[in-house]
Image 1 (cartoon, rainbow, N blue to C red):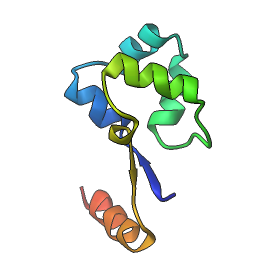
Image 2: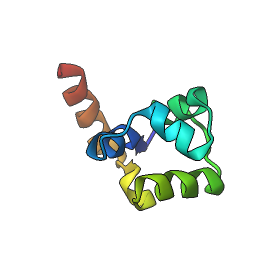
Image 3: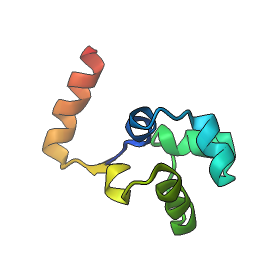
Image 4: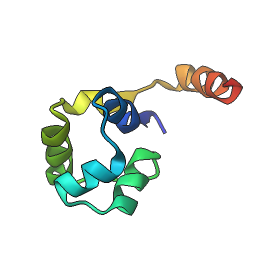
Length: 81
């Protein structure tokens, strides 16, 4: 998938857990976990707005677009970690 979800990075930067975010915005922990792991196929704008408001961030901080050529290199780097 050319979009990488960076919710984990945003949470870490704000010293917030996924559970805390879930409680703050009223989205279930399993649904946030699906989003965080990149397994979500879609996200509602209302959910994105709630996350951005709770984390005081812009949508671009939560997602990264990676062109196909860079994607393969990035996967190899992540696998090496």
